[in-house]
Amino acid sequence: MKGAVKIGWLCAGVTVLMLSLHLLGCEAFAAEKTSSWRGTYDLIMRWVNFGIIVFVLNKYAKGPIINFLQGRKEKVAKEIKILEDKRDDTVAQIKETRKAVDESEIRFADLKERIIQQGDRKKAEIIESARQQSRIMIDDAHRRVNSHILEARNAVKAELVDFAIDFAMQRLPQEITDADNAKFTDEFMAGTQAK
Image (tube, rainbow, N blue to C red; front, side, top):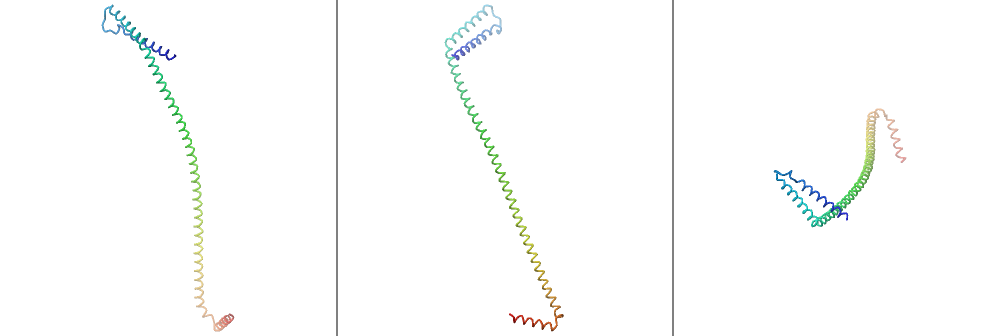
């Protein structure tokens, strides 16, 4: 009912608009002056034509115009409803996307934290491995140094023994007498018989 009233007002507005346009198109727009009865006749005919148009539109076109406008109104309402549904779907998708982004940011932060922890553990393992390796290398170096020192001591001892033997071989024949030789021989023989 309200729609019909609105359409009625719309038809009345269109009628008033057409009447205004018809009445404004008077002789002021004419290029030349006409006789006084011709201007009045034209004005009356305009009003008659306008009345006929209004009557025909009101009598025959009012229903189709109202139906057309109501159909158009329903079509526009359906389109608005479809657009509102699409908007609601889009808003829901935006919310889901934001939620997914927030969740992915949380997962990214967790992943980043785990990677940092793994990196710290790996770093500590590498440092500990390097320390153990350096201890092994230092111990190995100490063993090699001690081995070289022992070899050097043994070499020095061997040289000292050789030197002492050479020295003794040079000095003993001059220092040992025949009595010392006999005494050494007797001691040697006593040692071999005791065995």
